[in-house]
Length: 296
Image 1: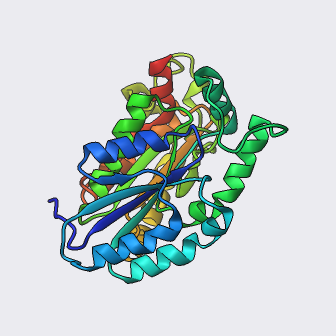
Image 2: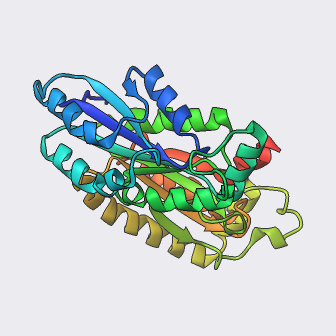
């Protein structure tokens, strides 16, 4: 059951240039948030003070913070956020990121100039410098979204879903399967490696199937280690998620990885999703590599 927050809600959107920060802010605007692009951090305490005037007001604000903020302001980000949270305002920090090769390709396709690039500063160096400047924001992020393998439509849907669920009484939980050969998701809070399980890929009749298919499920359920692995991961999640929830975490992403992200990780993520629905009825399930293959 959805319940409205009892305090004003503020989402701070940040991220590397080209990762989807503007898209996320537009989604929040569509959801009814009052949005301010690139607010200087020194003005954030003033905004918080305005919200404090009526702590029961159901106002929702979203601001974007990026590397155009002065470096000295960014180093004060943890202090500013801590002070704002002590005021009783519900604050979430969302960080949009992507792998550098993907960002370089996006800048090339859009023919845009990176805000930190210029004479004598190559795009790759600007991206590295930007990540360093934004480290104080990353360290405090409640939600990190990796847009490397997301289409614009998928990114919008993901932001919309996660933000809506974070306003509910339970944590916004996402289970994700992935393939290690494409890299570990940067937005994962828990990462479980299931590559030690027997691989259905080496069964010719199962190679073209996925962990959502009965043939693969039957094969994995015949392996004793599959049940043990599933139980261990489930028990770990069930034990520790409430601790994170009690510390006011609004988002959590649990990533399950195998070699290609087609069989074992998909099966385990599907099973975990089924088991966790009783405690987290709005838990989301995403198969990263299956989504990529669908787009190709």
